[in-house]
Length: 370
Ligand SMILES: [Zn+2]
Image (cartoon, rainbow, N blue to C red; front, top):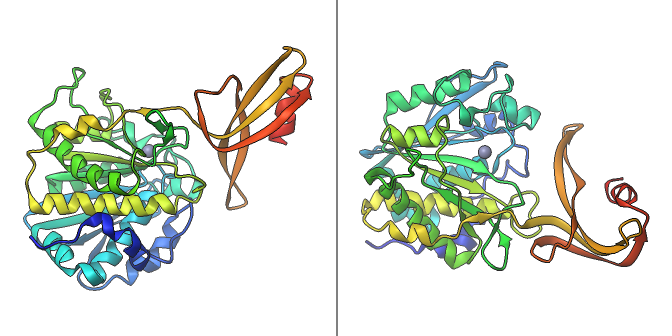
């Protein structure tokens, strides 16, 4: 099949980037005008509303036999998947140099998207919904209205494949160089024993294809999430019910606190996954296990060479940003997390304090957090 090498499409992403979306906080109001202006090839329909009565939509495109369901922001403050989803819409609206790929996907697949499944959490910039429920741990009880909606779409549409789009914190690293885990994948388990079922092998083969594309662009920045079985998690239960469910975690890229760089990789990963599904060959799954596990060895800042008088020793100081919504803006608040020898860690920024003498940890915390 004459199709482009997706790894070459990185430079073209700017042509597909939905200009109305930017930064970390993507709320329902921002996507409404985009949804309203989608061309007739898209079918847009309200499926219900959140606990606080914000509408939730599904968007369908394509008319192929393989059904694929994709949803984003089931954790309200994890918006990179939403941005990548709308970039994908732009790709289908005007694929430019890639008409063959677009045509192939839309004739082989029917795609249903649910952007911002948790609009209350998006508004409040929280992981959980307005009832303080984690939608990704609500797959069995379906306590939240948003979980019920997702489940109804799942039952009615009965997709062969699902994409569950999340963001992960900056702390995740990959490999010996402890580079940030810019994208992480998971083929969720269906039991405590983490059995490699026939279904999971197919999910793993989709991830294998996505990883192959990303390794060419951001080598050694792709991680594999733990496949510990979570009995109440969405992905685990969807996979168990026979829907091949791919989890994508968009993470950190050097200096990319708006997650606009990782947005590209998330877009390309989705495109690579959909291309793989539209071609329909799922035998190759073993390279999934070559993707290194995520570790937590990345920090936002490491201060080197601080001398603490009360301990009479030199320490490194590890700082993690806590994100808070203040006056409708995301503020990154530096928080001292470790005072130790941090030579085993990597950080976005290193600051050498050149032996600066401080009385104790309290003085240190005051210096960094104020
Ligand atoms: Zn999440």
